[in-house]
Image 1 (cartoon, rainbow over the protein chains, first blue to last red):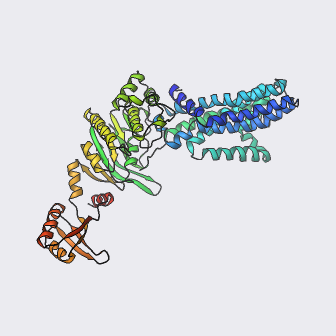
Image 2: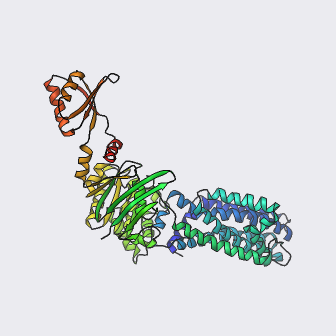
Image 3: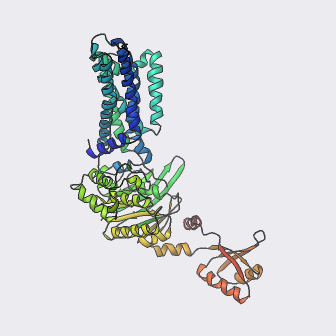
Length: 238
Length: 305
């Protein structure tokens, strides 16, 4: 972990127009939750539906994509990453630090709003609010690790990430049973199911499998991203 | 003593060969890398800075390969051509961040000293995106000087600078070289390189075309066949007079241009002979224009030789 890298990454993340998106998306969730609570419709079932589909299903992957790519891809794109790479700082330190900043953003802009929205709608009835908060945090960090790697590998990270979230997780995951085992979304759901009261949330992937894959993917993506960053080529314009 | 050794290095991008079997040694003092745009100068510099691996050959600094070695950056500083920096920072914050990233014991003092060296202390608290191009270039240099590198690589540092900024930067580079550092900068303008570099390496179309001090290079570039387009009061008589002189190798009357094309092989002699002959034969010269003065044609001649 490097404090200077963290400071630069943090300022770049929250200082730009991207910060508007980071605030706007969870705000939508909170406004909806407040609306449901005010109209008296909110209960555990509704809470589960909203948190499952809107928070875990939409907010978390989207924010994971924005934050995961946002901590590294713009710098690689405009070449300013040369100021990080032309230093005697190990590439893994750079990647881990950026992932930590991404995790902090996820905690602040995805996990916390999810928890708050859940509490707003139905308190911690059936443990749903806390469970979805935890699921959002862990799932969000895994998404960040994957999309950070994608940001190092490809200039089209955002497009590929969207394709993954939309095509693979949503569409194919809906029709091909086996595909669900390979979905960050489903692993997060499994974790949520384990934290919530028994039977409150149904999961398609066993907890053991989900946790293992979450760890393997997060750590693996980080290691691979560090290696690829070592071999990142900057060629200049000539 | 820090010496960069480039040994039979080639670099290709798919089908495009950017650098073709180049060998050179860059030692202490100021070296200018001269060549037209697209010659491969930037590619070479990025290979020296460890940001691009050679497709063939080796690039070493004092015997150590520079690719895949993060600790080499303690000894090297690269001033990249691309303008992108962390625009949301001030000049001071940017220079300080670079000092901190180098793990310096006293980053604040190093940053202050570097900013003073490039004379940017007056604007250090303004955001980078309010800077002019020349100011950004100087802050880039400050960020590269914070750790007092033995090797300084500058990619087209004079691009977009006005004459005063250019003079300032030249002075700075000369001082760095006089300190005993190994300084390399690239440019496509011979005059820029001449005034600062003690040694010049010429690169054309990916090949190492020439090497030497500026007098040798200038001689190479001057003592070559020159082509001229001349319009006079009597082209045919002028042609006959010129071909009789040893400085001219060929004359051609161009009916479409209604002009005389002359191929001169002794430039120094030709430029004195032409007006003299015109006066002797009572001819009036209306136009004398060089027709191959482009840098590319000069450089191509160097490659061909």
